[in-house]
Length: 179
Image 1 (cartoon, rainbow, N blue to C red):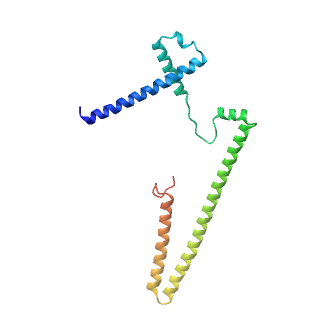
Image 2 (cartoon, rainbow, N blue to C red):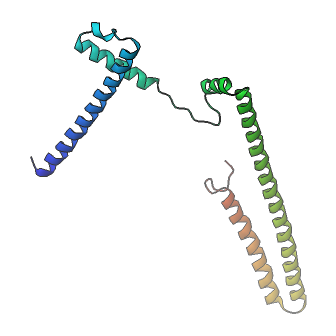
Image 3 (cartoon, rainbow, N blue to C red):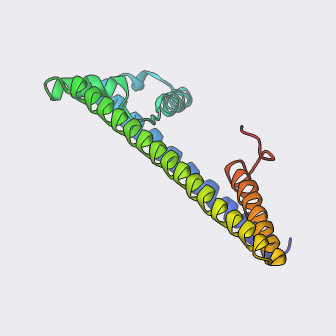
């Protein structure tokens, strides 16, 4: 065995020992809790059955643990709030409803603002395009066809570029198609 492998095995042994001592500690804590509630309960069990029983209780208690995520507390917690605070559950629900209404209101304002900004951009783009195309026509009529052609061409190319790039920025994943 190489020194590197020996060190790895030693590390694994240390981790196993630490894990075993943590398990023993939790079994001891469980045993103390049971003895506190019912002092003679474990006395009748042989040592092997006692260890199996405590391991089973630990497994059940670990599986019993639960997690909760979300804007509202768990129903059991809301019930406890009700016992501590008069109308606690009702107040929590009211606060959640108000927060939800506020969030929807803010989202609607953002959407309205984006729509107005988009409409203004289109209007300004139309005005600038009409001015440029009108200028290109005027230059063509004033014996400057090349300059008028360049102005008209760059205006149309600019409009097409903005339109195409704007659509691809809106739908970057699906080849300019809405999801």
